[in-house]
Structures are given as C-alpha cells and as structure tokens.
Amino acid sequence: MTYVVTDACIRCKYMDCVEVCPVDCFYEGENMLVINPSECIDCGVCEPECPAEAILPDTENGLERWLELNATFSGQWPNVTRKVDQTPPDADEHKGEEGKYDKYFSAEPGAGD
Image (cartoon, rainbow, N blue to C red; front, side, top):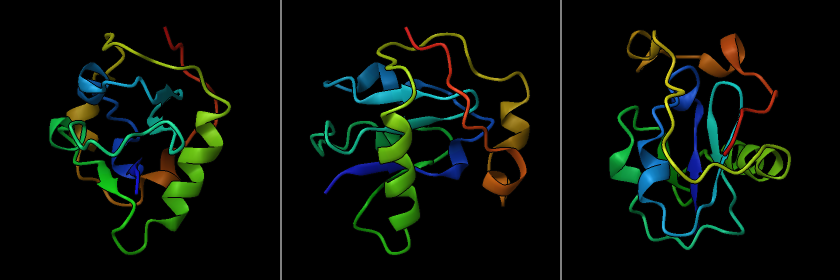
C-alpha cells in the first residue's frame, strides 16, 4: 500500500503534508503535489494534515489513475521536503471543487527545494 495525491490538491497545494513526511516522498508540480509510491512508507501521517483531503490510501477503489499519475510525475518533478509559501492565493476558493484535473492540471514542474 501507498498513499496518493488526488486532484483535490490541484490549485490548493497547501503543503502541510510535506512538513510531516518522515521520508520526504513529496514532489512538486506547478499546481499540485504528488507522492512517490516507491518511497512512501505507508505511515499515513500526511493524510490527516491535508486541508483539501487530497491524500488517500491507494487501497480505496478508483484510485488507479492517481497511483499512475503520482508514480509518473514523482519521477519528473523536483522533490520538496519542507513547506514553502507556494499555496495559491485562491486555494480556498478551489477547495472541494469537482473536475479540477480536466480544468487545471499542469504537467509543469514546481520549484522544489
């Protein structure tokens, strides 16, 4: 098992999860984060820290797409190990919005640290 970041993170990117991750398995895209499933130790400390409720265990139904997306982009985006002020100013407006992947997803990398 591993944890995955879903589209609920897109345009929110609060990064609270990064602060608590003991193995630094988060990677930063332009407008979302992903988890490297090979590095995740399944500890689960990140899940309750996410204000957007974007982090879920891959054992939940229907998350195959997100597991693949996390695996792909964690190999392309820079690692992020600490919370930085990258939260978009309109993040709260997008929290809970449906269909964010189709509307806003960007494959561009973030800054990392």
